[in-house]
Every structure is written in C-alpha cells, then in structure tokens.
Length: 393
Picture 1 (cartoon, helix red, strand yellow):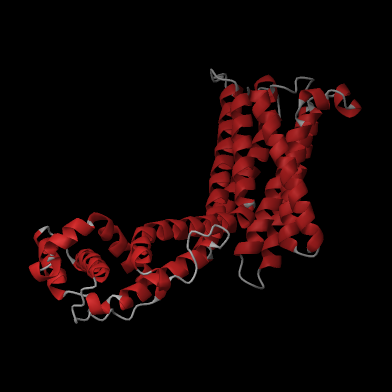
Picture 2 (picture 1 turned 180 degrees about the vertical axis):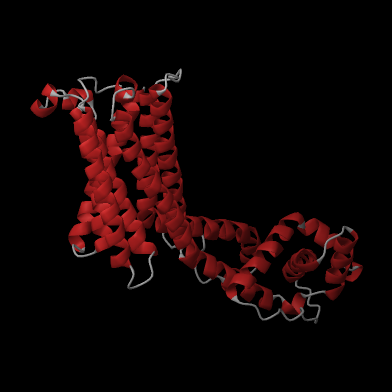
C-alpha cells in the first residue's frame, strides 16, 4: 500500500512537471513560472530517486547505497528553496523581490554545503532504506539530519507566513484557495521535519520509537507534494470550478422559475420570445428570457388584477408569521394565480397591480424566485376560493 502511494505521488509530480513546462514555454522569462517548474522538477526527482528498484541499478549508488539519501535530501532542499522563491515572488512588495531572493539563496547554499560536509564526515554504510534508524547513533549523522531538517522546517515556516500574508491581498477566490493549500502543504512539511528530527534524536539517545520512520515520512512527504500541486493548479481548476458553480446556480434559478413561467405560457402563449426549454440555448439566455417573459406576463394581467385577493393572501401570510420579501411573495403569488384564472374566464377587474420596485436584475431574479416558490404552494383552486363571489360565479 505504501509503495502504491509512493508511485501515485511520483506520477502526480511528473504530471505536474509536464503541465507546467508547457506553460513555461509560453513565457520563458517569467521568474514565478521558472521557480514553479523547478520546485516540481526537484520534488519529482527526489521522490523518484528514492525508489529502491531504481537507485539500486544506478552504478554510483550500487557501490554506496546510502549516498542516495544525500542526493535525495539535496534535491528536497532545492525543491523547497524553489517553492520558497515562488512564494517570495508572489508575496514580496515590488522592488524587494531580488533582495529577498539573494538572502534566502545564501542561506540555502550554507545549509547545503554543511550537509555535504557532515555527510562526508559521517561516511555512512550501505543501509539506505532505513537510513535514520540505521545511522542516527553514528557520529555526524544526526548533525547532518538536523541540518537538513532544520532548513526544511525554517523554509516551511517562511512559506506558511508568506502564504498567509499574500492571502490577504488575493482577490480571486481560487487564488486564496491555492494559497491556503500552500499553507497546508508547508504545515505538513514542517510536521515532516519535526517528526524526522525527533525520531533521529530519540534514536541517537537510545529511545528508539516503536514505529518505523520511513512510512510516516513518506506519507507526510506525499501529502506535502499533493497539497502543493493542488495549490499550484488552482490557477487552472479554480476558475473552472467557479464557472461550474455559477452555471449550476443559474440553472437552479431557472428551474425554480419554470412553474410560474409555464402557468403564464398556458394562458398567454404569445408572451414567449423563445421557449426556455430549448436545450441548445445557454442557461444564461434561458434564465434571462424566462425572467423577461414572466415580467411581461405580469403586465399582461394588469386588467385582471384583484386587490382583494392580494390583501386576503397577505393577511393569511402575516397570520402565519411571514414578513418581508417572503410575505410579499405569498401575496403576489396568490394574486397572480387569481389573475390567471380571471383571464381564462374573461373577467376584467379594471384594477391595476401595484408598481414593482425598481430593482437590478439580480434582485429582481431573487424576488421572482421567491414568488415562483410561493406560487407552487398556491394552487389555482385555493386562489379561486379567495376570489369574490362575483368573480367565481
């Protein structure tokens, strides 16, 4: 199961590399895209080189298998540094990015050189699979691990801080989602560093934990990459999700208005500009036409309006505890049902409906949705019972 998860994460990493390299070709001078591609590439290489079936067949690692851990850890250092550069590029004020990059690059170089020196001084043996458990008691190995993990922890804390800072400036919802995913990835990365360091220290001092270090570290590393890639690709899938949510909202609104529209169409088919049920038409057009035709239908019913029906329905709704827009919708729905029946009977009341407030399209749609939902609760029979006897006769 762990190996399958490892392979899945590696596949995700290389898919991300391919996707972003295509994007980099369009704008090769974009430092943000370059840092992004570098981060994904180094992460993918670090995870791939750690596969035993692979590194055991590479001559340089066949003679000294533990050397693969230095290579893998160095690639992780470059990956988290590239990620840090991406976040710095996004979050730093204009004109300060170069200075921030230089300082962090120097820190990265110092840590990387220290790792190489400590690893050479430790000269670990051939046990590469469980490196921490095998060599944590050796001279310089724990120091090497703490140097590597200290850099990872510091960078992850910096990425978390910068991500939260940039979140406050982000206006697009999908961009904020991506930044929160980065914050989650950095938190998992910090947990990876703390867990591995704690395991090494406990082993060094003779208190070896009862669990295996490798599976936990691999899982946390995979979680870091998965959250990181998800945050990066939020630029692509975020707008699509937003568009899908908007489409679904409009479609639900359109479906909510259909019962009222159908009632108007059955009595006054001449108000229809285009059948809203036409599936080839975009939902935005169907919704817009549905709203316009309902409003036109209401105007066509002005000679059949009965204020007494509206007042009676309002009183019943108030007695039921309704207030505000829902109260107005109940009264409007009952009056519309009665007016439609009066038109079918040919009974002209000579009254006029109240003038609708001047609302924007969004507010108008919201008002009509409340009315349409109320209309479904107000049957023609109930509206007819509320009509005066002179009309029912």
